[in-house]
Image 1 (cartoon, rainbow, N blue to C red):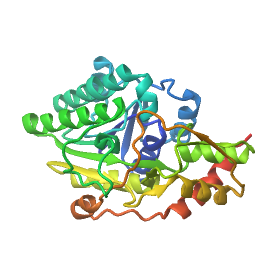
Image 2 (cartoon, rainbow, N blue to C red):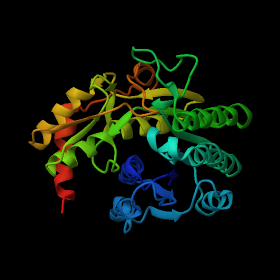
Image 3 (cartoon, rainbow, N blue to C red):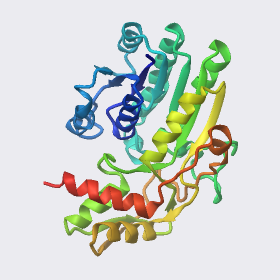
Length: 317
């Protein structure tokens, strides 16, 4: 039976990936440090349903710790890696630049070295649209150059991609780097825009809106992201970089109205200045993932928000 190591597997996207792999009948080794980027208890709750599954193994360790990473590969016979460990968030990475760089650089290097040493030659990296920085105001193709990140998180993701290419070139690893745009859905981590807006709306609180509302983001449902990751794992490409987004950009003012409709509340807006590290616009050109793996998003934003609102109500005290 194939064994997949999911680094950052207790997080938002990672826990969904772990569940999908277990449903396929694969063994899953979740490597997670349960750091304090947000409440560790929330991450433990994400993976608690897997504890009794015979294919499940939880390893508490940090990807920056080479011994912990090597031990996981040596003990569990890993055959493929999904690397989703990151100090996520552009704004947070401005405050924690060194940590973002260490996880993206040293952490990725440790995983790649262990994967090569122990023969796990399929490697999927959860990269980020933050590598594009401010980018052009058009759907962003993967070959948009030069990449100019404007946050440490984006720079760290670009460094991780470069390391992946190096190990593909030198050691023959099969690597897919998936540039994830703004992922939302059940288990979305606290502080991300959609969850933050929805929680404040449900609590009757005003919504902080950074900028004039024209900033636009490409929002992609977590189910579509999991499908892309599984497709990349199945294909085991020599080396590929592909965007994973919806292919559409939704202005912040429109998103606020859609979230308000999903939770059934009227928004009160608190206008604030733009935040450093935030690009004004993100939009994925998704033709590459369609061409390589036949992947395309299937969850419209309105439907995804309705499903998210149902989940969020189950989390309310």
